[in-house]
Length: 277
Length: 277
Image 1 (tube, rainbow over the protein chains, first blue to last red):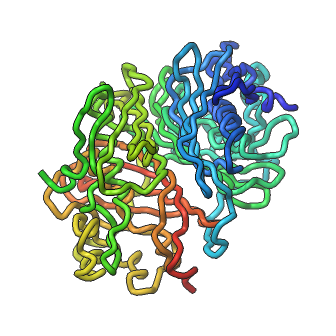
Image 2: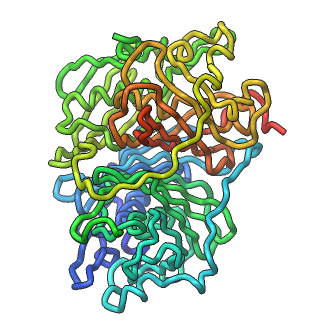
Image 3: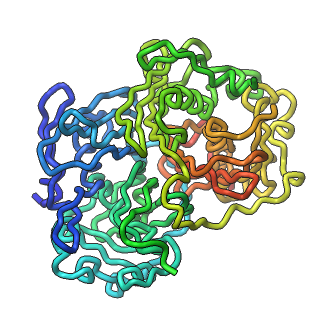
């Protein structure tokens, strides 16, 4: 069992309630060793486990999530409430609660991917990445002190074209691309996709040296079961303004299929200076 | 007061409940006069009115919506439950209910656009549309019999490059572009943006003659208060597969600013034949 599976485990307590615990192994750790918030994707995967436990359909077709509070690495509960259980789709509300407050509010619609109308098929251009050997190991570059928490669990290799910010030279466009897998060997599935859709550094690092960018809302769609192997991630922003930015990402699997999409709205982080050049 | 404002009106009943009524003036009417579902954007605007009634912040920064059942044009209620009311953001769950069942489930985070960090600003390329005089009046083309319900309320002018499907010749790419306003004079605001983000015909009409495409989930982000005048809409899909497709749209105002973004996941409609060509 991987650290990721342990960190996202839920224990049924009956009547739609599940016990869990946000895991500091997936927290963001600052250069000075300060343990920050647990990665949002890990929380999404946790809530998803609780929902799929009683879902009549296997695939999380649409997950929308509003991040309300910063979770602490201590006891938490997930409450699952089914709003509809239909023949082709089912919808549940699921909330991650701590001390009686909602930390993360989600609505998840499940269905069966690839079951209906085989007829119509069309896919846009895939992202272009250099071979993984030419990409920048994020945690390695950031230095040994950063190889704890989230960056110690995730093997993220950035496309050098979107890694200039690591050397203080943002490329001038809010885009990020890279390869993604866990450091532990684990086959990609819906839970890992929930982590992958927000695994890249904030796209605004491509235009400015900003601080941590808290996600306010993120919606992701699963489009197919991923093949084994490295996932390719590509993210961009369309509009950065007034302290807010959107980030839309795609996850492509090793077989070259678009397996997940997300869009989030986030706040521009503070505390590390303004726009670069 | 416009038909749109009447159709989206809510009456407070206390304790977070509001009375409303899905309005057949915004229903999709088939060529044979059959009245179908009320437009989803009108329902989004209705629920938004109920949430903004008690919101501490003015702008619906993030709205995620799961469409569970087809609403009928009769009495309905909206229930608003606040999950958090913070200094910079507040989040409510709001459900449109009919006969004790949830028709539309939403979570809405409100905030103040343009209030924070003026520093960082970046916007992608705007969509390119021909002058409105060269665009195709959707309802006019569809014929006088169709000028009832939704198409009778909305003045949608399609870019000829994405209007080939009206003559049975889809352009081969899942894209739609056009100008949008109500037929009645009304200044754009957050409520009209909720209608605009899903006002274009389904993008898959660009690749196939499909039937009505039910939206399963739609999330939209308001990015700025729109200037008076025509709105420009641009939508595309990235992936159509296994009976599902995504559709992402942008709304630009008459002043050339990106004012709203959305992405939805929908089912490929049935009943009007398979892929074109």
